[in-house]
Length: 342
Image (cartoon, rainbow, N blue to C red; front, side, top):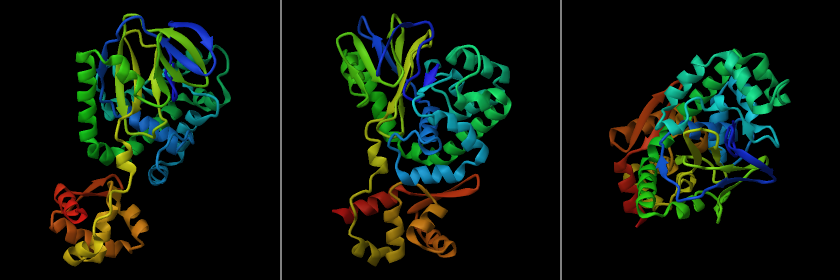
């Protein structure tokens, strides 16, 4: 079974405890890393759509919420039920223990998932009989729920993929960090620094959660899955017979949310004009045309004109994703802003 605080192990449970999941580690664990962005989409969906707030900035909550339709909202709602961090395995049909998994591969697996297996998975997670109230609609109409959930993940990813592309250097750095820790024997230090909700002690790993237990790593590897998510977001699975996996916020992710140091706007304005200077400064992260128009209080027609001029100067890129056009600064624009920040 899975949880948005944790994903627990089938058959590996030893005892029940309160407040923490303990993963007992009897020797130096073997680490690997999986770049599986579906966990980012899942964390953002739970935060923005289901109300399980874990530190996602409000502009991204609004952007995701406006993109996902009613059926998707309804499908994701069980993920935010108060006091219920544990969730069924079908939320992540292809686990990171199998290696890197694309969002499209996960969505395809969800759409191919037999509805009757969803009902069986609910029974494995919550026991025989009727599931908890927040999962009853999924049990009653499993095919409908799977379509809604797959559609919600798809829309969340369409909204946030530009941010994922922008984080490429952070993800590359994390791959290097995990590789160095594995080679140089620093696995325990690395595991203890993944999140404020994770500590590494004498007996192994402790992860905070509302439904907790004690588990044994045994001979399994630990697969680390960096996410672009709020600082308190942790998703993990201890029940895969091949490997444990832990999804956590990639170090430095807060830089993607934070306003950059302001350039000297007056000087930049003299070069590109005041509106375009403000527009470039606003694009500290990729945004849709509607997000930009709202934030800058510019009519869409006027915004299009200024974006055309900036694009002609190779200072922004435009990319259509579904119904939205996304705008992002180019490397040339970053160099220009850095010049005026000095």
